[in-house]
Image (cartoon, rainbow, N blue to C red):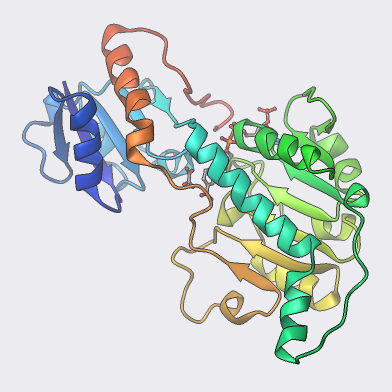
Length: 309
Ligand code: NDP
Ligand code: OXD
């Protein structure tokens, strides 16, 4: 069996060692060094060059190196019959929840205001916020959204979530579908985006959404840059409708040098690191997907192409 690493990898050698430690007899090639396209059984991809995947006639599975698959589905020439598998992993889930918790707590405990006061050598306590009165809304109640929802609930926040289909999660007020979107947004003081990027969710973080939140709400976008209408965020920060934002993902990555977000005092920026795949943690599920695809066994964590996630 031959696996091809295809697209952008921070360090292909780390991937190769992790895979070979677990499955020494698996042949690994790294694009564009492909000996014989007919021998490629599986591709492991992140932001691959468009049109390449269809060139492997015996491909049996496409595996994302991350949780999202929009980077694969952007290819208009994908062979429709090949299953696409994404990663679901505890290390990704806990990193994501830690990131969101850090962002919420720095907002909730007014660290930005205290930093400004520190710069002025000002010793002054601000009025504390009551945790139980702070409503956090999570867009997306999938693997990642449901984990952070439950962790926030344990800390005493009031948590609500929104998904495409109905959900039941203990202590979480669950909303679903377009019809309940505005009801969900109302009263949210923090809005966290954990939706997959699909035609339905692109641009969902826009002026209408911000206007429906509590005045001075805080935005956390850890999903995809295209969820956010960037101009609308700047306007909402200027008007005070939003008081700040923590952004890990952007329309263009890396964020361009002159982008206004870089220097905006109310925006915190991180370089798409909210949850980074640790190769050694995810290799077992990658190998299982390759083996099962060879044997025609049902694969875990496959994408429903009709939904786009
Ligand atoms: P899941 O597929 O497990 O969950 C997606 C959730 O979004 C589901 O609850 C789904 O609803 C909901 N959803 C999808 N479409 C709609 C819609 N049109 N309306 C309302 N709800 C919708 O994904 P994960 O939780 O694993 O990951 C979410 C995203 O996080 C990834 O797609 C990726 O883009 C991003 N991500 C970012 C990382 C980073 O480092 N910044 C790292 C990892 C992931 P339902 O439950 O009804 O199907
Ligand atoms: C992912 C990501 O989708 O890193 O896993 O963004």
